[in-house]
Image 1: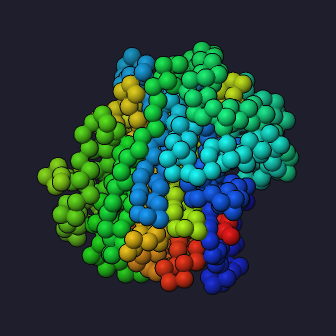
Image 2: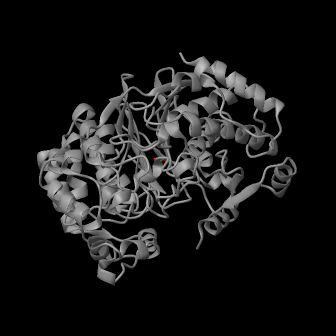
Length: 554
Ligand code: GLY
């Protein structure tokens, strides 16, 4: 059944008050896959903190949610400890040393179809094993061996294939069957998994056990590199032994914004997520947004989105390689200028990137964790497209990303998410591609109030924005905030995308009459969120009903 039909049935069948978030006194994990959430809680109950649990969830998703959970991809983990220390672990992929600006263009300078998304040449150097291990080493309590135990167990002993995993495997068959190990492992040698079948991954269990024993060296310097080299040779990929050896996950300070008395912590470049989120919140701060999903509120929010995404296209890239005016883009004074322009313009007026310098001072997954002490983790990581580039590292049992598509393979031309991006995000050796991942933590008076994030490619930032506004302005509970219908505007292509279900025909008519070209999607994103009630300390978890995840607490 398509997601929109399921949502309609759910909304019609249940009065709004029957939907409630999962409540727990001590700790909570919300992720896109129930076994992963359960494993996170197992680690919390064994005395682990939120980071231990998050690292466990990250490794379990690599086993039970191979669409997006991964060893062969990368992401961002935002950690906020109860004492106020906060850090971002940037484990975004990097372009291989042999990558070049025009590597996906033909002799005439045209983009080669699918070159950035399919096959081993679409893969960036993975960061996940290094990033999760670094988080564990710096902020965890239990150590890698203990927190990786659930993932190793699930890979070795198997787990029942869910309906959604079976569907995903069936729908990606054409892409996966081109590569020997992908066909053998994920397509079960052509006898495709049905829901309820047991999925065993002995090679992946061995790879995980090596990492648990010897740390990320096993992946970046040890036996893992042989498997990598063989796979790259076989499928014409570019990642070399040297590329793996030089890879570093990086600790970065989070970006911090203010919105109506709350502190908003999110991620800096090479993700655009935190910068754009704070830019948009700054623009919206003093505006009266009326009622949720009314014409007036959608208009103001969509105009804000358009301007932020125009800036994204022009200014955002890996700040270790290009100068990104983050302080200008997140400056309240710059936001005031954008707001003025929004209030004076109409929806059909063209939008260009602003001038922030003067103010300088295809499948991803997210999980959120809070522990009993109040430590919190928001982690978004990805293979980019569903099952990444489709290639499995031979003998090692894990899929590789197709993150090279997140670069501007030809500045000015759209990528797989339709995002038009600029020179700042052009390909260069060992540069990190620009991301939209937006793991975010909201605090007030020094205490964590919200932990959230979502997959969704270029839509991620707007999804996080809307869930935040739903809680902070419209006072919805966390499940209402996550369930509420979503819309998305990314400046180019120039239309406003809305979920098919949930917007009134009056609102749609008003938007059309105002000049918004509309497009529709069954659903946008899969937000996994936790809210903490400041008075009682109770944790409330919400796993997006658009997908099959689960919030589990104790
Ligand atoms: N691969 C999606 C993103 O990083 O935005």
